[in-house]
Length: 163
Ligand code: FES
Image 1 (spheres, rainbow, N blue to C red):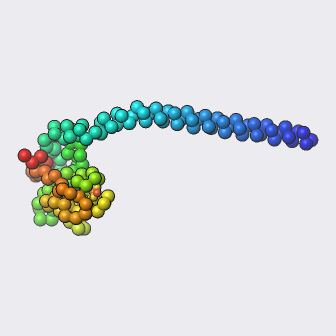
Image 2: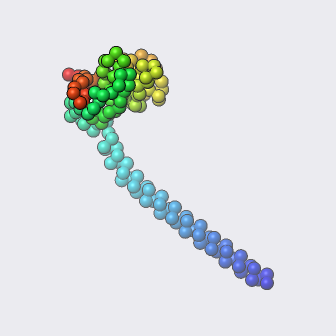
Image 3: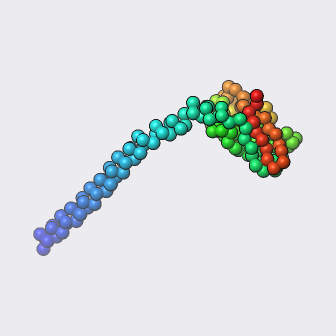
């Protein structure tokens, strides 16, 4: 009886080891596949996301037409892409339209328009910009945001690079 129990126990241990070995091999193979994917994908990502590439793409973009953006209510803002970079279109309460590059000049976080304060803020390190001019007015940002030219037209808003 006791020998039978011992054999049964040995079988169970063997089965558990088999399962854990199988699980280990699965994890190891998955890890190797992930490493290969990273080794191939990361250089591609770096190439496509390099500052030089972005600058070249940005240089080619002269303007952007934002369909139906002319319907943006006063006191609100919307994000859009100007080339590879995020940008902000703001329709102020005084009916002034402003478009600014939304990349913080400190370390490159995306800034946001805060309706409550009427300012543009960067959540990363507390940078603050004037929402009318893009001037850096608080926190660590060393330079103002790049301002674009805005032309409100029927059915859209045309945002273009200042010449
Ligand atoms: S990245 Fe915007 S304040 Fe630092």
